[in-house]
Amino acid sequence: MIELDRGKLFEYTGNYAQYLEQKNERLALEDALYAANKNKLKKELDWMVRFECYKEKPSYFFKCLTVSFKATTTTSS
Image (cartoon, rainbow, N blue to C red; front, side, top):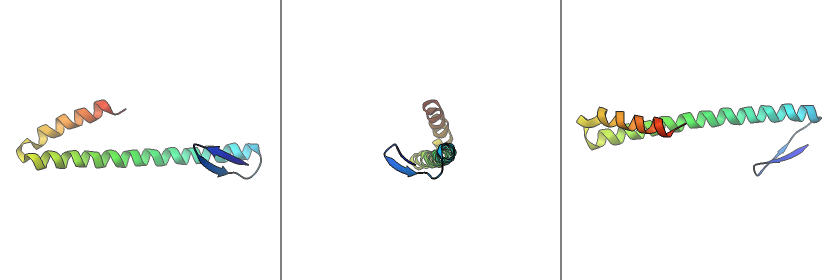
């Protein structure tokens, strides 16, 4: 069985029930990878914000972090 999903071609073996099972496994894996990538990007963004705050004025570092953290938590879902 062949499926075209979001511009990508996927091939499945077996009957329809096996196709559904394999597709669910693939989608679960994609969701897990997406969540891991999102977490990694959030950590990198947090690091960049901290670095920029410290670079501008080290004595202003913690106040800058607090404002940046509030901004990122209110805009993210």
